[in-house]
Image 1 (tube, rainbow, N blue to C red):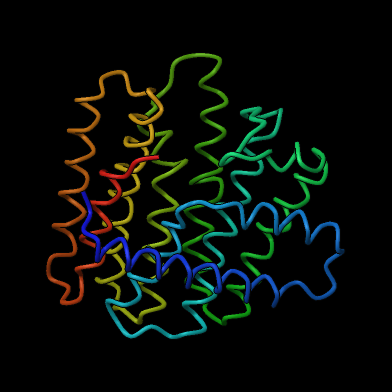
Image 2: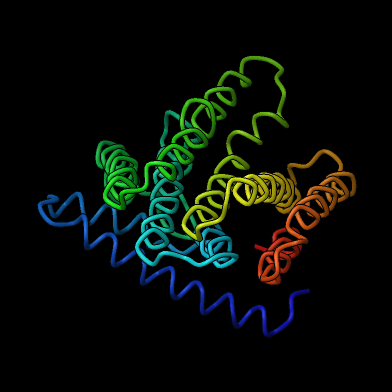
Amino acid sequence: MKSSSFKKLYRSEKEFTENTLKENLSFIGAGVPESLLKTMEYALFSGGKRVRPVLVKWAAELGSPDPLLLSRAMAAVEFIHTYSLIHDDLPSMDDDDMRRGRPSVHKQFSEAEAVLAGDALLTEAFFLLAESGNSRMAEILSDNAGARGMVGGQALDIASDRGSSDFDYINELKTARLFRASAAMGAVAGGLDDEGVDKLSCYGINIGKAFQLRDDIMDDEAPAANKALEEALGFIAVAKETIKDFRKNRNLIELADFIVEREK
């Protein structure tokens, strides 16, 4: 179990994240139709652990974070994650009526409004990165969240409903790649060199794989829970080993443990 000091720190970082999201949504909100902005806000501020933007921040703090790059990166990652949840819940996808204890976006509003809110969050994520002036972060996010990453994984998942497929690879694309992007973008925002970005990418994808396995265990979808937990712990061990030489790595070490110990 995580220490009380970690829990206190994480609550503080979640509060920082909420404020960062509000600031960035306000920044892009001028000229957005009120009904669309309301739908985006409903989706974006629906709870959640905010693991990905916290990961961005803690990865950046291994170096010397640029405040603007950090803010834009944290918001962009969570915008992408939120749009993916909106679209995942749609009747044409996973067809889920509830998300985090309240109606999914398409149930609270309409299916059309949900699609548009997701489209808007996706587009505005890249506007934020473009506005920051850092093209590398945009490249990292598009590579991991697009057709070769999260979206590609969703496409394979849909195809797998019609036959067997490689579920480990699907989960890597659907879940772990966005963790990889979060860690790598944080490294860029923190001014780390190429070797540092590569190490954080490795850390991110491994905790992302462990995250998905832990989700499967909690949802009773892991075919063998003990084996899945053992595999998740293996990914966590690799992640920790990857960042062992960074001087300010304590938060990321504890985050890795939190990934596999967390409860719903």
